[in-house]
Length: 328
Image (cartoon, rainbow, N blue to C red; front, side, top):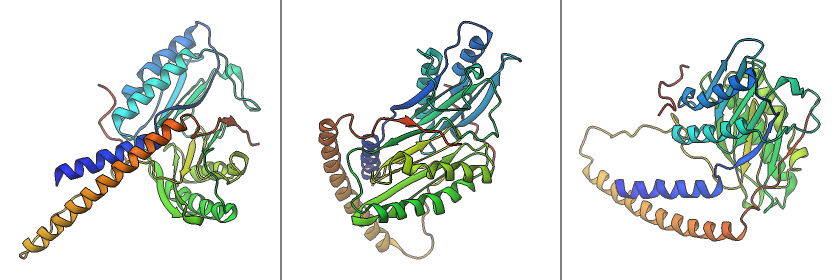
């Protein structure tokens, strides 16, 4: 049974990677000439992955005023520690290079003297600034991405189902998370047999109300982003983000999976044998079906490489952590 379980989870991972790979989404940064602040920034950024534990969040600073640098890291809740660390390393390398003074357009609060940067990957976000950021909700800059391959045929029913899932369920439940993780995911049946899978996430330094407010503003941006037409999309902000798709794309959330238990008492050999047989049959059939689906997705992805998500654009509107860390 262990072999079938391993094959099953391997197939799930393959599917997840096909739907959601760790690609860079967008970034902003301003160029910093060689000075004390840049040295402090590079020193801090190079240490971020080692400071991040398996909760996928860290906030730190380096240097003394006026050249203090503050940084924050947030990984997607289903991402394992090693993958989170690799994502952070890629993100910090991007920010350290900062090939150009790339400022978000239409951001009234943007000040080059703030000397800040932010980068979003599919699995993580990294940001830095000369201003302290922990406990401060930041709504800008924001980035939109959307699925360009498929639109909902019944837009209004799809919009209602999506908004109810995001606003009334996932937003509230994510905000109820503690200081280790503010994240929730879920599923809702959409119209025309289109399922809706989604998650919401805030940086855990926010209060419950701040997280709700941040996600509410992000969800209200959907018409500006996608018009509720695409069956997949996301809005990313420094303090929160969400994503929805018409296919499952999340892995196992650490701490959410149940513990395996063995029923005790009585003579359950026949029941155990029957259960084991059912599991083996289901696992075999499921593995076969998943492998067929994987092959289909590989062919489809090669055919439509680069068309899954649309170009990004910005829009501006006026518990104890685990001991394990990325240190390897």
